[in-house]
Image 1: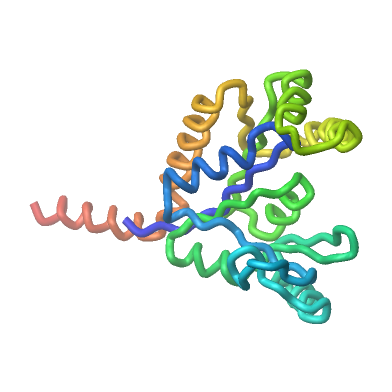
Image 2 (image 1 turned 135 degrees about the horizontal axis):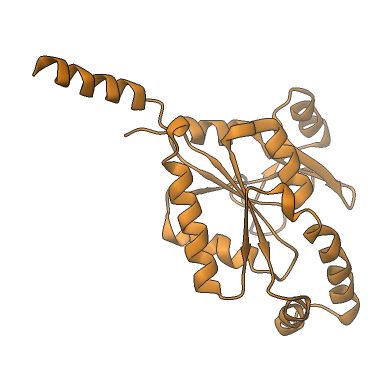
Length: 210
């Protein structure tokens, strides 16, 4: 039965497993669309329009914001980044879901813009010690950068109660199973199946014809 697509927001502090869970979810359901952001920064070698980003001039980006065509946006190190509304709404009309890997601020903006179409999930680490160990285990960042990520994590975790669902990622497979369960249940909600009323009316006509 046709249904209306939804917007799935995943947020977590760095190191809690959000990106890994996003990749696993995309592999589990290839129809899931990953939200491609727009940015005013210049393309880097190998990047393609519409794959890594939608590349915009500052004037183009600000025009999209003025016309309410950005679900969320922010300025980072002098460049603007945001989630265009058009591709998301087109996917929803096709019954496709869009996955957002954003922080709590972006999540708040998207929820404010799209309301009931949003399903938000916050990923928590099993402990702060485990979170720090994961960041150190990456071997990608200096001690100073990791300390900065840990300080930011406390602020991010304080917003956990603003989300529809919370998953503690103490076991990756179990956390992924929980995420899949959430998505399956949300897809079956009555208000995401616009043809359901007509279907039930058809059943009632069958009763009347007996």
